[in-house]
Length: 205
Image (cartoon, rainbow, N blue to C red; front, side, top):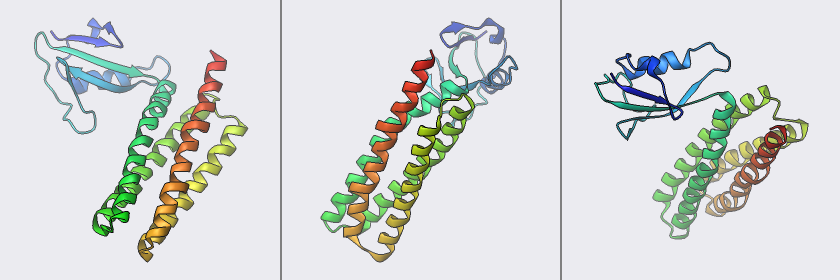
């Protein structure tokens, strides 16, 4: 039998299950309150990529499987924490674009700009789902909601501006939008919105 550990506690009720995907399915379908989401899995110390790896893994005698399961609110705060690091990745990529433009390496600048736009698109999708979950737990008040709407609208405007500047091959406009508008927008998510949400949550516990 495999050793199954969920949130640092051994769970013998899953030890007879022979496949990883079956354990995940059973764990996430338990109807005992808030829905559970699996955010981390490792087998014998090797981390499993929940998006890329095939989860139909046969578990062997003596395998040690460690899972982290969270509810919707915990997942939302996990996303917020990871988004702070994600923002740093976007800013690093922004600096790449600016440096390539300064060196007049337009090919690499365009490639990095495409990466920036893709990263920001993923970020906005994550924020939309996270905000929806936080609303269900009454952690988004009128003040925060207004700030989110304003910041989202500005972010979309910046993205449209970037696409327009790219089409016009306007390097000066690109740099201004990236260095000032986009970085400032991302900072508002991290410093203002996330901070206010965390403060609201801490006041309730």
